[in-house]
Length: 270
Ligand SMILES: Nc1ncnc2c1ncn2[C@@H]1O[C@H](COP(=O)(O)OP(=O)(O)OP(=O)(O)O)[C@@H](O)[C@H]1O
Ligand SMILES: [Mg+2]
Image (cartoon, rainbow, N blue to C red; front, side, top):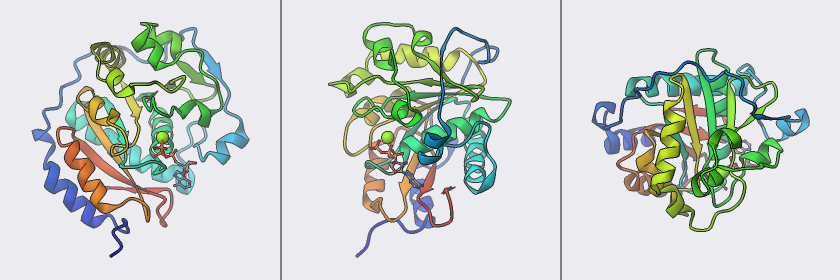
């Protein structure tokens, strides 16, 4: 029997069976008092070449137009609504296996959120087994999040802005880290996440992570993040593996699932 995902309805029922309603999530309330994330720090600014942007399917700055942009705009709206209901501003982008579209979804969701004038977005590359956000965007990080955790470098030194993408900040990872799941579970990692989360009240922090079933990083990091978004690749993700991943991540509030590589367009959210 073909167990690959073809439709989202049974998945929705499964997610609701496993997770129920938001009020049972035990999610912390954001209590920060900050201003906005648009203050000009002397951050490094990188340029995303147009040709690369199109090849990598990355949304243009402010670009929530067109079929693809519209799908991400809808995703943004749903995600912001759910995060607001939860009083949360940190979100992990997850999937069972590799190549299902986590990194692309994380990048485009961050761009779509940053296109909303009332929010800023910080995208953190926490796939320390295979950091790829910087490769997609076409730059070499001088410092990475791993340097902030392991070597106590300031997160502001490591942050990068992409020219033209106002209100979007990237905290890249520089290189593959051995024992990455141990690193993401350290107190220092918790302190870094707390610093990122509480600095600005209108900031949404998105974490790109390795596959749930191929490494224990996502599980190790889950207690530090308030919500998860699950990416499913149509015709690729195996249904039983979604159930297994969600059971492993039982403690994390999964706010929705994105159907990526959908025949209907860029993706669907439920
Ligand atoms: N909807 C899509 N349409 C076309 N190509 C896509 C789509 N989603 C992702 N891809 C491409 O598939 C490849 C894998 O996507 P991506 O890197 O986002 O997956 P991932 O889940 O982060 O993988 P990994 O677990 O290896 O980090 C990339 O080259 C990406 O551009
Ligand atoms: Mg990835």
